[in-house]
Image (cartoon, rainbow, N blue to C red):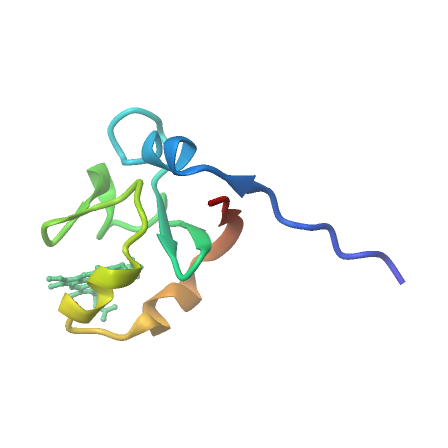
Length: 82
Ligand code: HEM
């Protein structure tokens, strides 16, 4: 059986660069997991209905008209280092 590789851990500073403005990737953190939403047209440029990518948006999901099920469509690429 192949061993599952651990996901990388990125700091908030590394995450902040993936805000849709400074680098090509667009990442969001939710409940300690970092998701890659680069391919979402709804996160294009990093802004999503007043919310910015490149940060931990766990506490902001309550403002959304949807649940966390929206993350199912995206890859959990890393974990947030704290
Ligand atoms: C006022 C706040 C927000 C509004 C009005 C909003 C609205 C929407 C709408 C209309 C969609 C597409 C329909 C759907 O998939 O249900 C969507 C998708 C999504 N939202 Fe939000 N949202 C808000 C906040 C947030 C927050 C805070 C997060 C992250 C914690 C988030 C993450 C996502 C993701 C990952 C998708 C999927 C994008 C895709 O499939 O391309 N949203 N949102």
